Each structure stands twice: as C-alpha cells, then as structure tokens.
Length: 98
Image 1 (cartoon, one colour):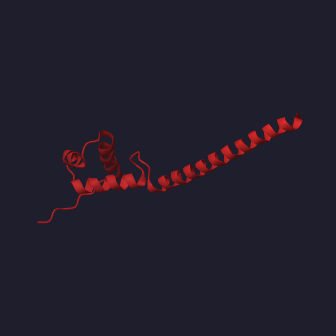
Image 2 (cartoon, rainbow, N blue to C red):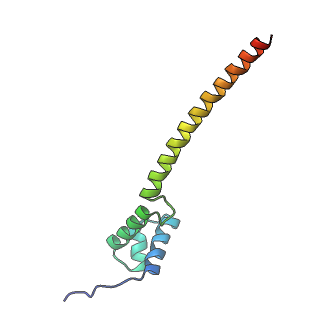
C-alpha cells in the first residue's frame, strides 16, 4: 500500500535546516531525530545554502562580493599610483623652490 505524502510547512523546514547548520550534526542524524527522510532534509539544506538562508552567502551575493572586491583592489591600486605621483610632485616642488 502506498504511503501518503507528508507536507511540511515552511517554519518546520527552516527549523530543520537551522538545526543542521547551527549544531553541525550530520543530516542523517537530524533527519532520524525529526522523523523525516534524509534526502528530503538534504534537499532543504542544499536549497537554503544556495539561497543563503542558513547564514552562508548565496550565489548572487557571492558574485556581488567578488565584483566589489575586484573594484576595491582596482581602486587601491589607483590610489597607490596617485600617492606615488603626489610624492614625485612634492619632491619636484622642493627642488624647483631651491
């Protein structure tokens, strides 16, 4: 006889994912403790990690962070170049005044 498919509300799913991520317990152990299928919990955890809902960074946020870090590195490089040019001009002014 076929088993009836159980439905879990969003709050229950979020709580289960939170137990896995915050306690560090294996998915199999948490699934057994909560009485749910291991693959079901694994898919919830995977989906939450992709979305960034478990405290980790999602794909979109990761891409944004990488883009911002690249921009920051470029700006830092440009700032160093400008500081070097400033220092050269300062030295030239000292020589010119003398």
